[in-house]
Length: 116
Length: 113
Image 1: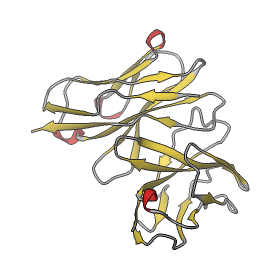
Image 2 (image 1 turned 30 degrees about the horizontal axis):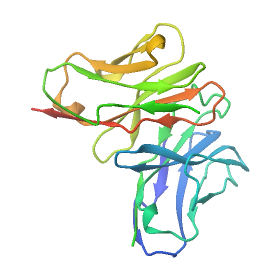
Image 3 (image 1 turned 90 degrees about the vertical axis):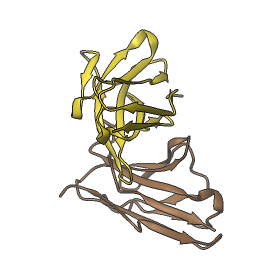
């Protein structure tokens, strides 16, 4: 089944404790992206990747890191989480980076992160 | 920079009522337009999309949207809503060369049985 998976689905952590949220897609998509969803703000893009080893900042990159060593994986790293990073996070992918304007994005199930 | 506005934050309708959710965008050039839906506890799914051609676009589950270029709008419509349409709806845009998809803040639709 074609899908985007994320792990963990739920995570409660404390300020300053490094964490990684994994994202994997099995559709051979070039483009991958991370969003955070907050009430009243919709989805805001954190980072995106056009292909392996090619990443770029979205609208709200502060406090986050990403890597794209393999085409299928795009982990989101919080080196020192803070309470304002408590949010619902979605990973997404689409077929071609060059066609992002036209390609549907496929979303993962979401990771609900709470930072105490 | 591109931006998207959804003016209705929460809409409450009874079953069989007609629906129209507003979406306005800001961008000077050619855009591609999307509506995504998020059912309770689920991830976002594509409802419909517009790239070019007929400005009236039909999507899944009886939804449609009309692109009015002069008004920078892409409103979502459904003639008769069902309880199962209760969800949050997001309008989004992407310009042809952009690498980002910009979302509106979302509209929560509640359909009363």
